[in-house]
Length: 98
Image (cartoon, rainbow, N blue to C red; front, side, top):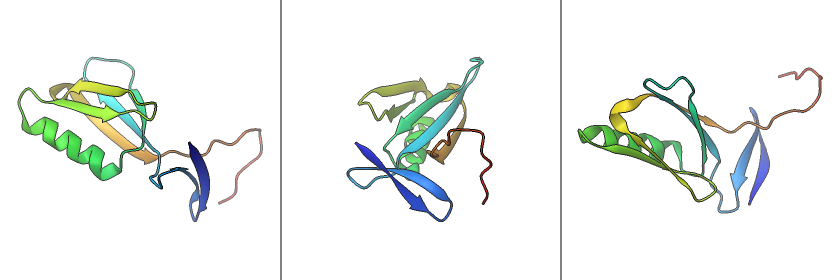
């Protein structure tokens, strides 16, 4: 279960255990669409997982999905990782002021 918290920069989702929900976008070589993974892992855990996978010539990147699934990608095929806190989406046509 998760809840939203207000921060100086807006809102962020927080899991019941206190961890932030992250969204990881993964660009895979020779694949036109990027993969989007919602995970409860920290940004440091994701970065460490990629570093460990790249250290082994036949390594694989394994990320845990929030729905208890796993994403497994050959590390040699990872083009990029974009790690960001999941943003609360607004509904409607109103303008947001910072």
